[in-house]
Amino acid sequence: MNVILTQSYEESARKGAELILDAVSRKPDLLLGLATGETPVAIYRRLCEAYQAGAADFSRASSVNLDEYVGCREEDSYRRFMDENLFSKINIPRENITIADYAAPPEAEVTRLRQFFETHTVDLQLLGIGANGHIGFNEPDHDGLEAPVHISPLTQSTKEANAHWFADGAVPDRAITMGMGDILRAKSILLVVKGESKRAVLRELLNGGKVTTNNPATFLLLHPDVTLITEESLTV
Ligand code: PGA
Image 1 (tube, rainbow, N blue to C red):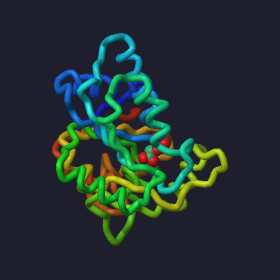
Image 2 (image 1 turned 45 degrees about the horizontal axis):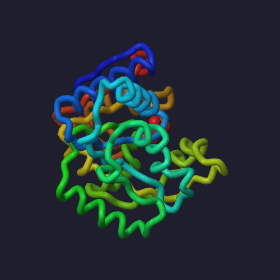
Image 3 (image 1 turned 135 degrees about the vertical axis):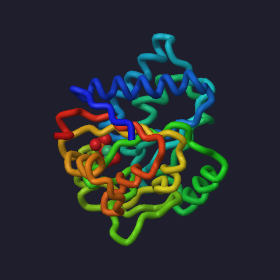
Image 4 (image 1 turned 60 degrees about the vertical axis):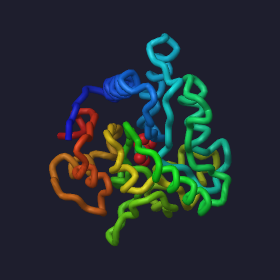
């Protein structure tokens, strides 16, 4: 694992955006795996700025999102988050965007996305991490983790961590998520860790060397090309 330590979240976001922009310029028709939440916000802002300055071109790029809530309102959906933070401000073609439909029957969406991953390989997967070690919505589970796209019941701690995104504070009980297999098949992974609440799972990832379903992020130790960017202060 290639670890890049920074002095601030803004520096993490700058370095993360640089890696993504570099990947897009080297392979203009790449498939980006994208994440939502607090962590990627400043990364996406920098991608938009690069596009608006004429320094980036997404016209041949494609994207697939890690996850989406099941049965949420449009304004609370990750689809809306992505439109507001990235898609509406860069020139990625609409037809090149793949994200689970929050309003569709979830079983049908799982089938559609499993078919997508049978024929597509993510070139660069951007990840955040949950305070409980989840990546995507692959929640810790001592019995096992699912490899393909699936419907994931959300843990109480995840619902509490994400409640501030919802006007009424009511987080859906379930989400559709890429599975651990889909994530680990990405050619390269960029994990950005932001926030004090991630300190314990980050330490386990950096120091433990042990893969455990109780901290799904530790599965990234099995991948040959992971870059982790985080503030140095979170690692001590
Ligand atoms: P955050 O969430 O970026 O909002 O901290 C990350 C995650 O839950 O994966």
